[in-house]
Figure 1 (tube, rainbow, N blue to C red):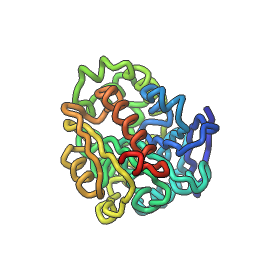
Figure 2: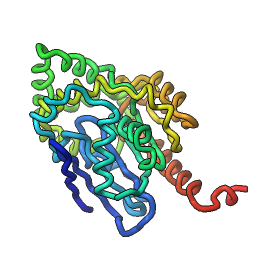
Figure 3: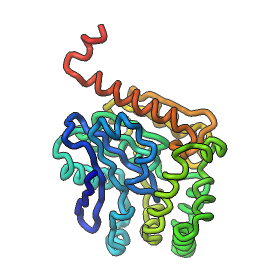
Figure 4: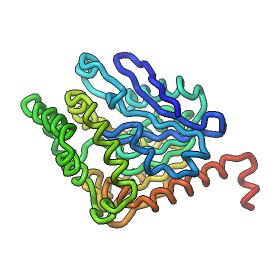
Length: 303
């Protein structure tokens, strides 16, 4: 496994990658807010971990990626085009002009959709899990996001992020707020390793940077450009997601031309432990479908 640091103006992004010598179209994983590039590893199917060229790319300001405080404070707003531009630059350094298959969760799903809307040549396909097109969240993280909008209450968001990063009980409660199926979540074989990595990563993030990201993400909106997405797209999520409601997930699928929709009944935001087998099955099936349809003369192979 290789580690990468990509320097951008005022910030760095980070990535881990594997199987570079295998060739073929890379799979790019992008995690959600407060997690890290290690997030995908416990639940990554062996067919991909060992048999596909893959990259796990960080969100801005998520350890060990960094944003200078002066940089994020200087951004009056963050647009979807600006956000996508960071990833286009990072991917140019990592894989040159190659297109990739993108798998994004939550803010990683938004990132994948934004890339496809603004840099279509970069994206061969998208699997967005609990992603969003409009950056206003619900539930606990939505409440923190609303508090981050005011300078009078933003300190409380910073304090909360710091406390959660220091105390495992608070972290567990915070993550549990996004769960729809608690029994499946707690019994999943991926629960403990993913949560351990996530807690370690959260504690290394800068609470001020996280609060600013929450505030700036609240203003992103792909509504005007989501219809431009032309690559094969699968929109997945739980129909009991406390953060990203199923109505929004359906809206995305309805507005991305030709998109496929998968909703997991009873599941919330934490797919990796709530519906681990279904997630792995969908991921493998989707990537195999994309690879088959992208081969030369693929159409004639199905006749």
